[in-house]
Image (cartoon, rainbow, N blue to C red; front, side, top):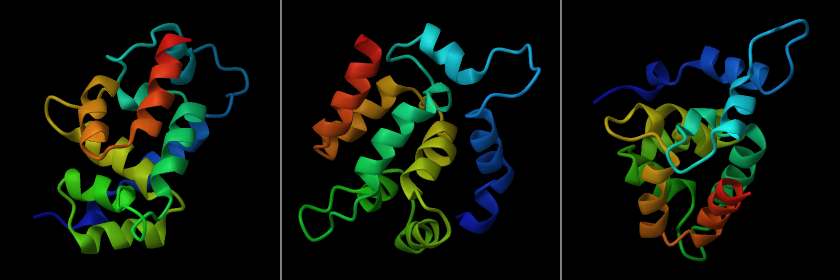
Length: 139
């Protein structure tokens, strides 16, 4: 068992935020532009544009426990996090699902792409989030 405090790389969170804005004078192609050119279900979650991730995560971050429970808590549980780790993420980050997807999901062996995420979302009955992915891939 790992301690989530050490598992969450805060420098990664800062790098994601920095990469979502344009770097002045940079000649490198930002990851978000690369993903826009190569969009598909095989796209690694780390290359999904921030605007798409933001929309997906806003939907998952809603605390739906009282309604149906298929929210970030279920996502965390499906990814193997325990309730203490999920609470930690909720307390420390504005979007626990963003951290779960970018840090935990993407680090799993034989996983990390939109195509791998869809069955998990289907199991959670989160067809609204799947539609966001389908729209991005199909546009």
